[in-house]
Length: 339
Image 1 (cartoon, rainbow, N blue to C red):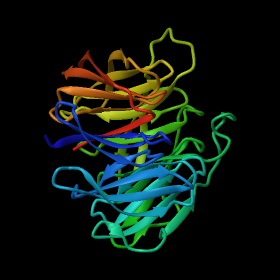
Image 2: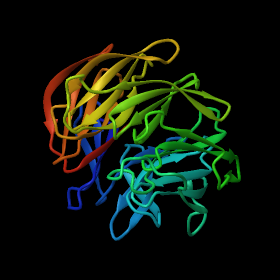
Image 3: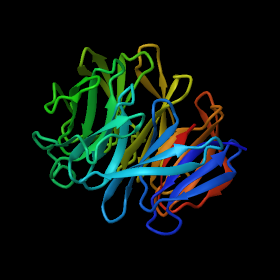
């Protein structure tokens, strides 16, 4: 059967790499890539871009074959540490990579989806006032790269600076090196991690790692404005936990945010304006769910539990989740990307 989703296993061993699974979750292939981290498709879905770490951090390109297995094509160093997130512009002319530990990001020029130059076009170090948490915000930590729905701005989410910076983008030229807008965390020290836009482009949801919350923002003409922030944890939970992945159900009616520490994911009901109401909190049945996602067909949901590494599955129907018996042990399971 054809591959229906990919999972990245981050291990620095022979089991580290990209696993392909069919619709019924039978493994179809394995591509060894030690230290693989994040996965994203090209806009035409003919190529797969990855981050990985060996002797240094790289962005790599794979061609997706007809059977959905992968053919390695090329790679470039990021010159950063802990390269962790990728996105392309809507036309696929540029690729952007966030480097968490070095607090920087790259702009790579592409032609027909492949690297056009021998090195990145721009390497930009994040600048600004640090957040108030000295343990987590000791310097900049670029964590996410995503374009605004109108394609006019690249958003860089920085946990250390406690903000989202928007860089103006010009098709064919790339981004301006200085941000055009700064969104600062309304709750200082929130530690923003990942940003997701609503299908209508009017709302953005921001997962805040450090204080384990999700913020509802309004997007308009290159600006983000805070509307509300909700906890992703039960009110009586007092131990340490960190928010991680943020995903929207294919029908746009439910939003899920995973919790590492209180190992679970919070499911929020989304109303017509993009506002959220907590629907349920579901144990992940694993440790440290780094990523979660809805599988093709919308009837299943998967958790990639990073430590020591497992993949757990749930039947999904309109905001309700039922744990399935099957579970795979994958060392350092980090990312799930459906076809």
